[in-house]
Length: 635
Image (cartoon, rainbow, N blue to C red):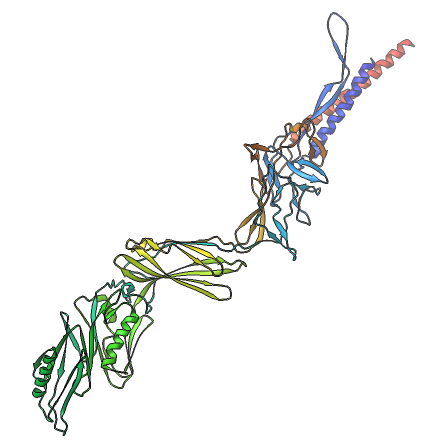
């Protein structure tokens, strides 16, 4: 009969412990990362009754263990980037003094020193890159030479994430420019031409390629008008009768370098003068003809008459020919050359009376005298009509103290730009200006100007010729090295196509990084702790490991949602395959794992256990009554 007392007391004790377990579960239903425990009951021992059949009499129950439910709790979102949840199996490691504990509670935050800690001040363990270097002013610089160590072969330590972190600048070493230089016949990317560009690369006032090519020519002259016909230049001069004034008629001039000089008596008639003039010209090899009171003189290619008398008017005209490589007296390649040719002609016809130049893309002739000057241009045997049209206003009657100006000549100029970083972190502007310079049968040359402007407005310039083949492929240079502000290799992937659909392609990139200031931290699913900076760059400061155990239910709870390994759980380890770390789960930033306790189940089990406790208490009462009756029977 006394056995029933032992059974009842054992039941009371075990069911009390069961109530404690379920009460603990219920009280932690909102505890982050809490794992439900289930009490396991068993009999204490039994006695065997001797007889024909085996029969055991139990000696009460006890809690042999509490099973840990490691199933995933629900995930809740938070606004704290340092709140972490594990999506799957695994544990965070935390440091408490010299002890290492494991937990599913990912409610971490930064303490006063920036360390990631839980509510109890335990430090989160990570594979720490230790790449933050403290400066004298209290800020931190990221040492970009240090990387996060191999997570499988490192000692895990706490990590500090301060607010005042700077990502140092990285000087630009390489620049890559990719673009097509639009070589279409009609463009809008124009600027006034400069004097050193070749005429073959010039466009008219409407941005239309004039396509001036070698050996195209025109006639330009000053003074008495000169006509052109099949390579012959002709000018007609009016010769009047000489009035008797007591002075002989003196004819004195040079024509194309040959001197024509003679004297006739005072009062000679126009016919007499013309006959003598024609004779002298013929004698010197010049074709001429007389009509009424005029003489027409013809010479091939040039007509340079410099007069020393008052009868023949100084006149200078020549067939001017465009040549990429000028060799002859009247060959020209650039506006600068063309101006020099016009000056040489004007100095014959109007010495010291003109100023000729090229400014803002326009040729101009200034009349410095008080007399009207005459300038003219004509088509020759191989003239470019668009070129002549753009020169039209230049060949004109120029009244005193005024200018004659051509229409504007334009260049095909295309600009690109970007930024580079100096070693000291300053951001400089780099611009590329490409101007079409010269067209030859087998190649096209563009003039490239590279300009770097620093924060103080100081400028570094470099000019190079870029040569393309006739199909628009870049021949040279493919790379240029600059030595200021530091050594920079600029790689060019350029083309020069006469196709408008190719004109808009442009890409500029460089490998420098400007100084960045910390914007925020984030933790990725692989556990990487990322610092994002104002320059849009990122740095990895560490990686959070996910620990695993052979038997999670063998872990020993030490309170505060912390667990330690036991001989049943074995030591913590990391998943790996062929020497590579495998997480086995994801780390969810800005999230927390809620308790996996089910209120319905816990309340049901609590009620059942409470009823069992009540039944055991009733057994004690019943046994007491039976003993009492037995004692009364003896009386």
